[in-house]
View (cartoon, rainbow, N blue to C red):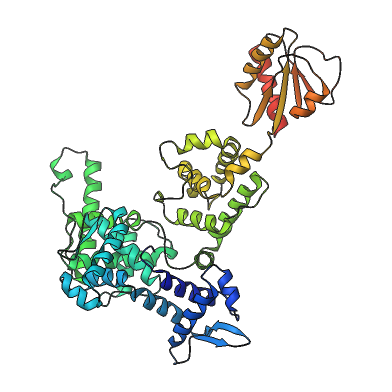
Length: 502
C-alpha cells in the first residue's frame, strides 16, 4: 500500500518473513531478502521486542548464537501485530477514523492524531494522491470523502482488506457470520457460484455496504424505470417479476438481520458485488496467497500450473516470475470480471494491445492461441479461456523477457526461392508463397539469382523452392514449383511447408 511508511513496511516484511519458515534467521539473511539494511533491521528488532504472544511470551526470539525466530505456537499473533503496525500509521489512522467514527473537524483530528496543522495537510495530500485513481477526494473543510459513492465504497473495501486481511474483522456492530449468511442467500437466489477463497472479501464488501447505508451515504439516481410501464412480452414481464421477487426477499432479509432499508438502486448495486470489489489483494505475500489458493482449490491450482508449463515450453525456457503469473491467473479465474491493472502492462492501450502482440510477438501469439484452443476442452479451464483477449494481455504483460525471447528466437524455417526466369520472377514466386505461410517463416531471394554453399550457410537456409531441377545438391530439401504456379500447386506447396514446421 502506498500509504505505508518505510519503517512500517520493514516491520511487516520482517514479521511475514519470520512466519514463512520455522527456523532461526541471521541479520544478514533477513537483509538479503531486500527488507532493509542490517543496521535498520537490527534497530527494528530492538523496537519489536515488546511484541508478545497471547500467553505473555516474547513474539520474536533473539539469541546471540542462533539468530532470530518467531514463536510458532501463536502465528495469528503476527497478524494482530501487522494490523497494529498499520493502524499506527497516521494516514491509515485518519482514513479508518473518518470511516468508523462520528464527524470531527480538521482541528479535532489534529488533537486526536497529536500532529500539527501542516502535518495534517500533508497527510491529506498524501491520501488524495492515492484517492485520485478512484476519482474521489478527502476535503479538509469537512474531513469527509467526496465523489461517486460506488467508488468510495470500492476504495474502503480495498483499504480495509489491506489493513485487516482475510482473517480479522473490523466491524463491531456487524457479525461476520450474519454477512456470510446473507451473501449465501443472495448467491443462491441469483444462481451464482462463488469460490470459498473469495468469501472473506465479499463479507468485507457487504460490511462496508451496510456501514455506509447506516451513516446515510446512499447511491442516488435521478431517474426511475419500470418494465411494468413499458409494452413488453409476457416472457419479459415474467422475468422482471421474478427479479422483483428476489429484490423483495433480499431487502426483507437485510431489514430483519441488519435493520437497513434498501431502495431499488441499492439492491441493483448489491447484485454487482463481484465486479465491485476488484482483484483479490491483501497484505500477504505471493507465497502466502499461493499456499492459500493451493490448499483451498488444489485441482484449479494444478490445472493452471500445467497451463503455465505449456507456456514455458513455447521457448523451452522457464518463466522468471512464475509465482506471480500463477497468482494472476488464479485471480483471473476466481474473478470473472476483466482485470484492468493500472500499471506494468507492456501494451497499455486496450484497443491496440492484441494487434501489437500479433505484430511484435508473432511466434508467441500463434502458439498461445493454439494452447488456448486446447484448454477449451479442459473441464476446469474451459471458463478460464473465455476472454481470450484479456488472457493473452495478462500473460504478455507479466512474462518477463518475452520480447527478448521472441527477438532472439531463430526462425522456425528459412526458405530460399530461385527461378530460371530471373530475380524479379523469384520475387514474384516468393510473394505468392508469403501469402499463406505460418508465422516466423523467413523467405529469401538473391539479386544474383544464384545458389552457392556459402550463401546457404550464411542465411541458414533449410528449404529451397525453385522452378527447375538443381544441377547441384546442397544437402537441403528442395521443393519444385512451376514458373507460373496454379492455385492447386500453391496449396500443395503451403501444405508441405506447414508439415515441415509441425
